[in-house]
Length: 154
Image (cartoon, rainbow, N blue to C red; front, side, top):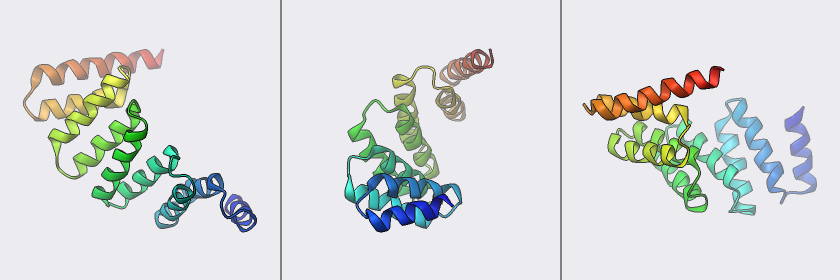
C-alpha cells in the first residue's frame, strides 16, 4: 500500500528526494536491498547532502556484503557529520566485517568519544579489547556497558 503510494508520487514528482528515501526505507524493511539501494542512490542524486539516505545506503551495502563500498559511504556520512556517533559505530562494524580490528577499534573509540553513553559501542569496544588481550581497557568498557544497561532499565 505505502510502496504504491510513493511510486505514484514519484510518477508525479520524479525529483522528490524524500519520496525516494521513503521508498528505500520501505524496500529495506522488506529485505529488498537492491531496490532500496537504488532508491537511496536516486535520493542522493537529487540531494547529495541527504545524510540519512547516505547512511541507509551504506547499511544496505553492508547487508549485501559490499563492505568496501559501505566504508566509503560511511566515510562520506562522517565527512558531513563528524560528530555522528552512530556513523562511527557503523563504520567500526564494517571494519570488523573486513577483518580489520585495529580500524574497527578506532571507529568505536570515536563513537564513544562523541556519545559517552553509547551502550552498544562500549560493549563492542570492550569485546575488541578483550580479544586483543587488552584486559584493563576491555574490562573498563564492559563495566561501563553494564552500568549503562542497568541505568536504561530503570
